[in-house]
Structures are given as structure tokens and as C-alpha cells.
Image (cartoon, rainbow, N blue to C red; front, top):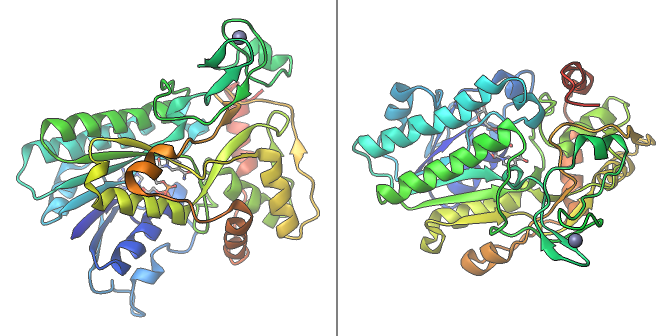
Length: 379
Ligand SMILES: NC(=O)c1ccc[n+]([C@@H]2O[C@H](COP(=O)([O-])OP(=O)(O)OC[C@H]3O[C@@H](n4cnc5c(N)ncnc54)[C@H](O)[C@@H]3O)[C@@H](O)[C@H]2O)c1
Ligand SMILES: [Zn+2]
């Protein structure tokens, strides 16, 4: 089949396109080469080009913006499936560049869906990248009250440095549990709201127009090619670019907050399964490794593996909207699609580090942190 991949020149998109091609599909990459992501970094799609720089057979590269109906309409010609990955990706930045995030993510998706709803096309599958960020705080259990849906920690609690989530009914400290797709969503940033928009809009329009649609809620992705120039993306990329520049990784709160780190190759596995399997249609799925890892552990694993004897700098500060714990229950995608994460964090980071060491990463962390502080979004 012929697959249009919006955001196909990005981190996830470039690996997906390589994989699709290996599986015998044709790919059309549609990307506007967002400068924040691509400036100064090597092209992600080198493996899809011939030595003279032209695309390999079965690969097309279209420069375009999902907000442009004209550009997107012509990119949709002759494709059998769409994987919609194009997005502005930065939680902190979304809290002040609100218009920009809503424009690229929500409006961009609206443009795509309106074309699918109103023009002749042959699209028989739509897969959209959603995000764990839509959950807000992950699932938790109170020893007395059972499974609870925690709300965002209050500013007063954070100022006291009481980082753990508490039970909304009795106030006891709660224990994190795996988050499943049934957990009510509670986006705590503009980015997260736009990801929820993308997910819900695609599912609703897909259903109305009989276009089988799948939303994948990616957890924290890491791996080679994650933009090092973008200070707002994944923590593993940020920490490794800090270490590469002999700077300490900066940790908010106390470092014991946890996330679910999933290697980009497992994300590609999930995307490929969602594309071809009918069982996926109309569903949302978590895509993670299913294992919580603390942020402190990420920093120490990276510095050990990069042989940089630099301890993380634990700030005991906090960022507006940050959650404490969230890791995926991956039972649903395992049952429906046979997804099984293959890369353990310890091995996966070696892969990231080998790549980071070949890059000249400009460390823009301080600048990004200053932007948040100036606006009172990190205290
Ligand atoms: N990386 C993660 O940890 C993570 C987690 C959850 C969800 N996601 C989602 O996965 C998708 C891919 O993320 P990624 O990590 O590969 O990010 P990325 O920034 O590397 O890739 C996104 C690509 O989209 C392109 N793009 C941005 N705006 C565009 C527009 N208006 N028109 C056309 N192209 C545009 C960018 O140039 C970039 O190449 C995104 O939708 C993101 O929200 C990522
Ligand atoms: Zn309780």
C-alpha cells in the first residue's frame, strides 16, 4: 500500500518510513521541516535517499504544511493510508505559544479531516499519534479507598515539596498503578489538549465517514534522532545533550517521579500493527514499555553509559502542569494486536548514546528553562 506519513521527516516518522519500505509499502513523507526540530541537525531520512540525494524507489518527499489545504490535498492523491504524526512537540512551550500549538496540532488535524471528509480519496486507514500526556496524572491506588483518579497536585503542596500524589477522598499518599485506556483523561497542558483534540477528532470523523481510524497514545519515546536541538522534547534526549556538553542534567522535583520509556522501534512496531490490523479500527491504545523508570535513574544511567562522571542537579523546583507518575498498562494493545515491546531501557539507551556521540548537540536547555521561569511556569 501507499502510505502518507505527515511529520515523516521527524524522529518517529523517519523510522516508520524505513520500516514501511522494508515491509514493501510505498511511502510519501509530508513535512514542513519545523526549524526548532530540524535546524542544525543531520537529516533523519538519509537512509531513504540515494547517494545523489534523490529518494529511493518507493519513497516520495513532499515539503508541506498540514495547515495548508492545497498542499495536503495534493499529497493525499493516490494514498491508501495516512499516518498523522505532524505536530509541534513541547509541553512547556505550549503553555505560552498557545496559538502556535493549537494551530499546527488542532487546526492542522482539522484541515486533514476536512479533506478526508469532503474530497474523493482512496484512504482506507488513518492512524493518529496521541500521547500519554492526555491522561494527566497516571492511575493510582489509595490503601483505604482503592483505585483513584488523582487530580493535579496543588501549587501549595508543591511549594511544600510534598511531591507524591494524594488520595482526593482521604488525603493519604497514593501508590502509582499502570494506567489503562479507561482512565479518564485530564490534559494539564495546551500540548496535551491538542493531542486529545487530534485523537478525538480523528476517531469521530473516521467513524462518521467509514474511514477505519486508530489512535495510539505514545508514552515517553526515546532513541536515536530525537531532536537534540529542541529543548522541549524527550528527557533522555535533553539529558544526553546536557551530558555531551559536560553539563549536569537538571532534574525538577526530587527525581523520583516516574515515566514509561519506550524505544522508538517499539513505537514503529505499534504503528505498523495498527496500520495493517482490522482489530485496531476505531480503538485507542497505549503504547509504552509498561515499566516505570524514575527520572533520576534516567540521568544516572545516561551519565554512567556516556562515561561522564556528572551527577544530576536536583533542583527541588517544579514545573506547572507536570505530573508525578504515569506508566502504561499495555494489556489492550497486546491482546488486540499482539504488540510486545522488544527493547529494554538499558539496551535502548546504548543505541541513543551511540548516536548522540556522533552529533554536535547545541544545548539549549538553559534558554528553555529561563523562558519557563520568566513566565512563572517553573518555580
Ligand atoms: N516523542 C515523544 O515522546 C512523543 C510522545 C507522545 C506522542 N508523540 C507524538 O508523536 C508524533 C511524532 O513525534 P516526534 O517525537 O517524532 O516529533 P518530531 O518533532 O521529531 O516530528 C514531528 C515532525 O512533524 C513536522 N511538523 C511539525 N509541524 C508540522 C506541520 N504543520 N506540517 C507538516 N509537518 C509538521 C516536524 O517538522 C517534524 O519533522 C507527534 O505527533 C507527537 O505529538 C511523541
Ligand atoms: Zn483514600
